[in-house]
Image (cartoon, rainbow, N blue to C red; front, side):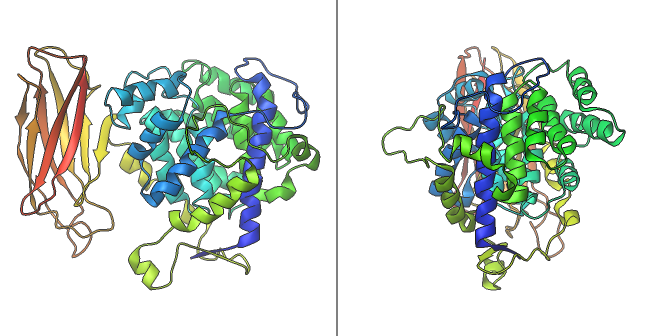
Length: 492
């Protein structure tokens, strides 16, 4: 169990979003610039922060958490995208168009999104997952994945969100910047582009190379990806952290001076330093310059859509939601062993360490799946659908697909059961392959392996193919009443 002092935890969360506003406001005037800058501070008038979608989307996620609790996943967040997020630019527009066509997340972030799936839209909005799961990086990164996959699929835009969410969640307990970066690296594929860009910065710093050269090496290495992409901008954030050596102003100025997506790099850097040091680390003059307000630009509020108007109000909402998001299993609850306990006493982090925060299990589980895949929840076990390529088909053509009934982590369903696949297809279409699946072991206990049931099938289009082709797969568990209904969409 991790024990947080109530006031100190609140102070760190408040500083996270004050830092977010400072960095977003300071970096916004230079967003999209390709040159190195020489800023000294704010370039905007005092009084209020600039609006920033980096924070806007997190207010929408806050509403989703309040309404759905710890059951948040990419499908729920996808609905909030459609209802409450206004912008249609880049990956935001692509994912919403895909969802309106019927593509379920993460397909919504993978299909027709080559130009933007490696971009910055997701790692800039991870604070909500870290702050509702403080000191629990393995939980924070799972939510960050569900979030990021909506508009980035399994690409670098998603690995970058996992990296930052791990750092921010661990920063509630660990205050050494290099250790936090190593925790973040331990959560993403070793050979991904985000890891490569971060290591360029770390190697330069360790070898006494100046920050300008480090920045230029990152730009050169990322030239094939182009501008406004996550690997380079994550590296610029890390550059600010290591070359700034813990000084808030120096770190912020260095990150923004690297150019590119400057409001994102500045805002995320401000959040991380705010979590590490609380409000004491934030310079009074920079904090007073913009105040406590939150100014939105990307949210469709609609009738009765309450969203916090200040960082203080946002902090209060998050504090109330932490017990909801970190609720333990029934066994732990009965034993009085919550994941987190917030008290008026001293912090107690003796149950965790930097080493316990490290590990690549989650990314190895998720990133071995097809890029064109999605899951549907079920009363007995999730169903995973994996296409071998983009789900796009022409008349008479075929598309390979794997259907898997997965073990449901933490439960004890008998996965030796029999499952039947029933397809409800457009006229003239057919499916070739197995229709009956057999599990092979318990999920969890009694020494049986945690293995599910899998069938490889081929979907064959008929003579008539619409621009959007919707149909249904029904997965029946023999001897049980509730089937799993899997909505399928294939484009032409």
